[in-house]
Length: 121
Image 1 (cartoon, rainbow, N blue to C red):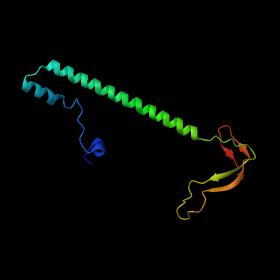
Image 2 (tube, rainbow, N blue to C red):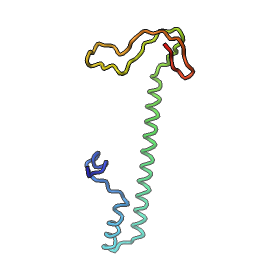
Image 3 (cartoon, rainbow, N blue to C red):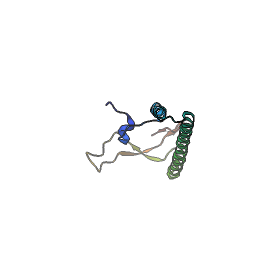
């Protein structure tokens, strides 16, 4: 496609501080500014950018943990034993041709439960 993922998402090109370093040094040389002071400012800006990135990462992690905790609290644990009646869910059945058609078949009686949670019906 000849474009970067950043440009596809945000609609503009991404210029990292490292890419702009050459142009910045050239402008400083033209204006006879202090190279060391400018380099120190750029170094501080890059460190600040790194701190902002780490802060965004931490807040994203906190949000994901809270969302996972909320989701896990909504899960209802069901204990199924031998002799219980269960429905068999068929994920290959398409609902759209007949909307009222159920994707479950059964009920079936549980005959055996393996140690890893598989059922024999």
